[in-house]
Length: 235
Image (cartoon, rainbow, N blue to C red):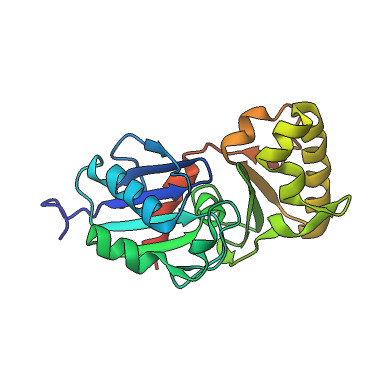
């Protein structure tokens, strides 16, 4: 059931390695509530994370459907990988479990994909990377998502992956200066690899970026990871 004014409200959820966030959007994708956040439960098993989402949902008021961004490969609402969460997520039907818990239709997508949907212009080749606990990625061609890119686990340099070089653990171990130097190399590598028109960088660690970015590279606000949730219901 929609509101008396006919509007449909979407609860959008971003599951991360360190925090779970939620807010409610109107049909145009505008925020209707303040973003709320809780620490990701430890250990971050499915039942504990779903409990956290239900707790956030209870404080967000009325909504009619749910969009979720998840840090891993997602197919048909089922989470296939969860490197920065818990092995119990492999093969877990999150869409069905959350739909039953909240009694609302639920759609689930990779978190970087959802961030990208909230950031892109929809023209040309657009690449999105997220810098947080891990390294997320999403690729769009004229606004169409290329699914399950998961580039973070591909080899980058020195026989290490993008995530091993640019994830939060690498930032904490090597320091901000080394991390920024690696990011600069990654941007050059990705431009040669994808010939993108635009690169968007999101995630909680963007505040640590100190390098000068090329004109076609843009930092997007963390809120994009939630605002992209409305796009899951456009088709």
